Length: 231
Ligand code: UDP
Ligand code: MG
Image (cartoon, rainbow, N blue to C red):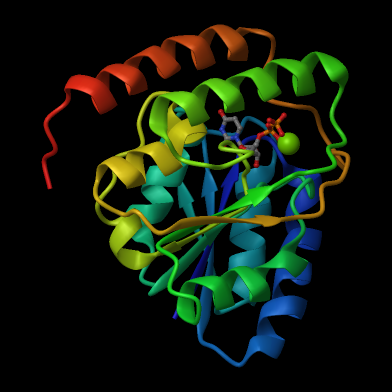
């Protein structure tokens, strides 16, 4: 089974269309699947929308967090809830394309990857985001030894064992490949993916993202350097 997880914070205008597009792509794959929308305490009509979509589609379900815990927590709940042997995450705002799903699925099932991260080689984000992001990716590569270009791509595919053995908390969604590697999953790959402008709504991360990112990079560095593995 394939599980598709979408973290949602105030994305009401994207959800129906995203569900339709995922269905369009995944139904052709001939595998059983589930779509899990994790509502991360939205204050708009997102949860109503998720309820309505899931009442009409047996493959779609919704999970709701009591308040806005952040993308990491939303992904973690999605991972806990998922029952697929392959798990794919994507953002709700159409910056990630559902059309990448079949190839990502193949890289996990046929090519034997533990984790495949999307690489937004050509990005449609403002410069004040793309430049610091390049720096973070460089620093994370150096620190972790993992040769990825784009650690924080929303589009990622995992073997079930990976999502059931990592703990994504705080703002650690930016470093999931590092968490997975640290937990012993070393076959990590990347796939160039199409990237688009956000279609509706606004970004949920302001300039403070870089402060968070920096502090998290430090804690990740401590973990890799001095941490004891639990698994
Ligand atoms: N998101 C979330 N909780 C949050 C912030 C964001 O679930 O507290 C979701 C959001 O709805 C989207 C994804 O995480 O599906 C990425 O967020 P966004 O597009 O705002 O980030 P950006 O693309 O600007 O990095
Ligand atoms: Mg986005």
